Image (cartoon, rainbow, N blue to C red; front, side, top):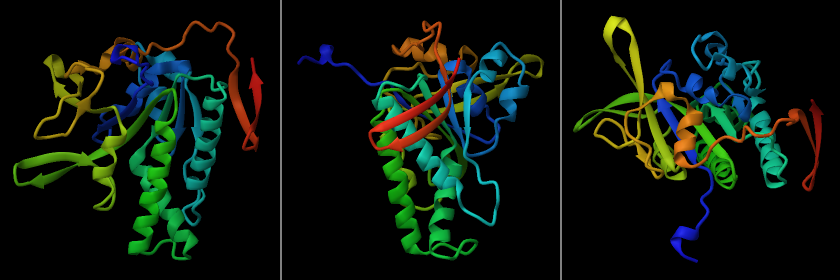
Length: 271
């Protein structure tokens, strides 16, 4: 087989940025072709932001997996069960969406650690070295599962500024020392949303896709640096060679999913 004959999987995208930079709003522009696992309970902007993508955002399918009670740690279990189901559906060709979004990896780490601490009977106390190792292993397993999927995956992550010998650098807001360097290699694309003030007090938001001293970005699909966020994710994916499937006129939307066994999936659909 020659290189030109290879068929590439849809991209794994790590979308990073400061709190409130517009990561979620940008990812939701995929509209009805997107399925988001929300661990932050932070989709209010998707409902209230008024722009050309307002209607599209309202059409994204949402799976809430946030922690509802602080005295318990059950959200991580919800996330794992949801991902297990998504993996089964994608492999069976029954997943009715083009883009899987996880919002966000920063909180995902916290939920995973809470589960580790609860299992040890010390929820609310400081983690020990074995808990960090277990958390890293769990998160690596999740990333390997996502990497196997033949759909576009968008992982959102917060950033924090750290002072280095060469100046301030925006790094992923992920706990621990061993984990942060392990995350970017899983992704084809590592982008950061940046904002700058334009005329009349307006802000222009762009995607940093090329690495710089301030942030280690990358693009394997040659997404142009400083691409306008206002272009929307569907348009950018189209330029990358992965247009959303909007040709299905009579697609049934998955409203609930029940995993019956490892090899059988029952779908409850509503037209």
